[in-house]
Amino acid sequence: MSGALLLVAGCSSGQVGQDASEQAEGSSSSATETITVTASSPAAVPDALTSIDPSSLASQHHAGTYVWKCSTGGQYVGLCVSGGGAVTCTGVPGAEAPDLTKYFPGRPGAMELGPAGLRYTFVEGVPPVSARLETGQSVEFGDLRCAKPDAATLECSSGGNSFTISGPGRAITTAGTVLAERDYSNHPDSGSGTTSSSSTTAASGHPSGYMGASGMVSGVRTASGALVTASVPPCDGRGILILDSYVESSGPQEGIAALLDRHPGAEFAMPGRCPSLRGSLDGARVYPIFTDHGHDTVAVCRDKAARGGNARLLTITAEHIDPC
Image (cartoon, rainbow, N blue to C red; front, side, top):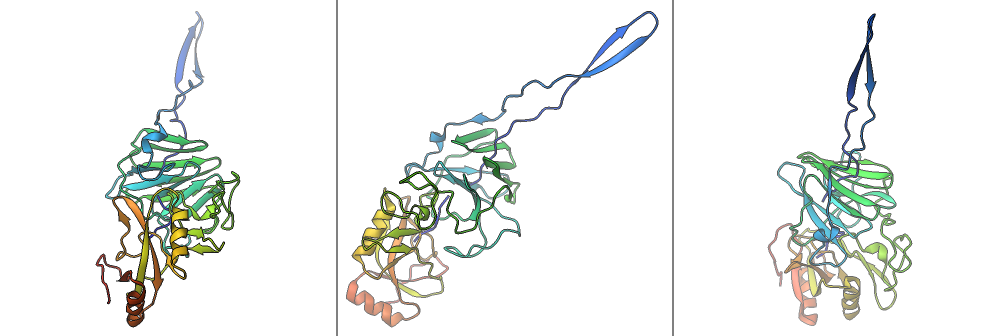
């Protein structure tokens, strides 16, 4: 199963301010006494946050990816994922944020920030995380900075764009340019170093715009040159035949594409698409390679008898049901 990009909140740059102090100087003469009040210039205040080494947040499962927890109070702990050039943090957007319509339709559950701006998105399929960004700490990835200035605030900033996640409700607020859901220009092309769109292809031949900040894959290019994007089957009790599964390692786009070439006509889904699909194995994300037979149980069982594989009903429970 799959989830898209996949990664919790950051904190912003900034210095802790200090009010100008006032000093009183007295001067007297035999006739009168004058009191002159002079506002002293505030001394330069060093950043009160401790900058930590990004390597302390490096993912154990995905090279070049950084993941960490971050709490703003309350029951839930947020999660942040960064590929170095952009960061995605979980939180609750305001009512003005549009619904997502592509891979996981519904309300967004995270905010992405990169060199091009801000984008509402989601985080799924991230392996267990132990690293944390604690109160009073900050971390920098080039021009991108996340920090936690106090126990209830996470901020991330890059250029003139920033977002804040605050309070027990993990409310997301933004400042700057907000990109459309399908605008992937925050993700650089690994081949040329320029910004990419959904049609941009990296040096590997795979579309770099379909690799999220957490390393989650939503599109690959098969040997025929065809672009195959992740399917979004509903978890409505339909039957699928899982022909193969890609357990994530290095080069996930190449691995998924190779399995699609091996099983002509098959689709792939992102980890975590439905609770009844296995989302991970020993901390590595699992992408199912499958055929979708809708609600035709006879067809899925006939396909299983002919090709092998595992028949599975897609449901909203974690129960693995084989209709055959």
